[in-house]
Amino acid sequence: MKIQNSTDLDTEHLKALTSILMKGSNRYLAKVTFRKCKRAFSGCYRHGFYGSSEIIVRLGDDVKYPYTMNTWHNKYYPRYIVNDKFELAIAILAHEIYHLKTRHSGTRRLKNTQIRAERFAMKTLQKIRATFFEVESN
Ligand SMILES: [Zn+2]
Image (cartoon, rainbow, N blue to C red; front, side, top):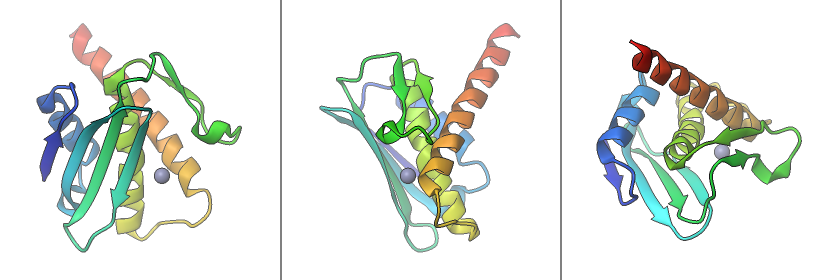
């Protein structure tokens, strides 16, 4: 799996993060690109044939932290806070990985997929934070 990074985040951290989140599904993913953009942020999952799927994460320089994630200001979507650019990268990457995993496992549901992906992103971020604190206190 290839990691490409043109943001100011540390490439090794992004590599480590990606392999933690992709655990068990590495074989599906060919490439993850972290790209900087001028405004806001976005994620994109390109489904490819076996082993050729791609994820692109775009991170804007204008995002003010802490930032409240709430897709389309919809009350049915989870609302959660990202504290910095790295946490935003975690949330976007986890969201796209949810699409990848459900697509490849054949459990993709047509309804509420975006809400499910956002819930997964929120839970993943909480898990990563908990793990980080565990490491810190040891
Ligand atoms: Zn999505």
